[in-house]
Length: 452
Image (cartoon, rainbow, N blue to C red):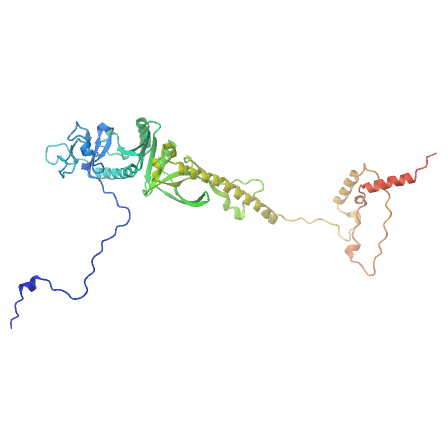
């Protein structure tokens, strides 16, 4: 028995399956900030006729139309190998040719860069970070920014990326974006070069990334109060290069997304005990405090605290760019004085309680009931002698009538009350105006008869 041959239509068309249709695949949502793509080496060049300005054809679409084409007298140099470049562009506006730089050469393969691949990758990563910051600063009103490098470094492996020159009116600021570790000699060289090219009035900023472990070592956080607001500041342990830059007058800060972190100095401090203060017990931990050094961290600071300010402060005049951070530092210095006064007041309040607990009371020595009055302590005799000497120059009081005898009640009295010593008479002989006047009246009424 033979099976009937299947028709061509049934073989060519897929059989429809029964059941609900499969749901369509949803597009994957991308979150977070989009990472900037690395520029191509054919889009970058060093313009030697413009003091080493970096040309980026992708970010500056007007450059192919404003710059001369071809070799231009050796004007364009490769960032990696330093060879001369040729600028090529579209023949007309209707052409879709992409402008680019190519190496000068006629032999096959000469259009490629001869620098090592690792060096090209480092240059691309360095320029990407600096160019990204340039785009953000160029968007600020009144700010013009561009990249600049020493033309003599073309073809060399640079340790510091090209500097970002930011100009606002007549004010110039130079921004460094290091990515590799810095040596003391390199820092000193960069500081001198910027001062020689831009003048002593130009501000020199060194902006590091807060997520770069080579230039950011976290030291914890710090809870502070500024104008009644509770704030949390990051603490960082600066590197030797960052301390050198700060000591030479450079501005060190860190960049976290769209926030600048401007440092102040933090110094561990222990309050010295003053007279009447007790820092023991519960007050021992309150003795340890910290002090601030601002607006620039001192050289002996134990750590640096970071004040967050928006990146847009860089579009302000030079004297006002860090004014917001300086105001916060002034508030912290004022709070430091109030904090010390409060802790010292607590230490003074704590002193009497500590003295009362540690003081051992002394019991007075009183004569025993069986001891006669003549054997009283020497202190009573000395007191009586002092009182007698004090009243020696005063008139004698009138004779006091003898005291009436005290009749003991029936029954026996307690032995302690019967044996109590009598109070010295010298203590009852105190000067009184009443006694003096009564004596004068008696002398007038009973005159003394003359003698003989």
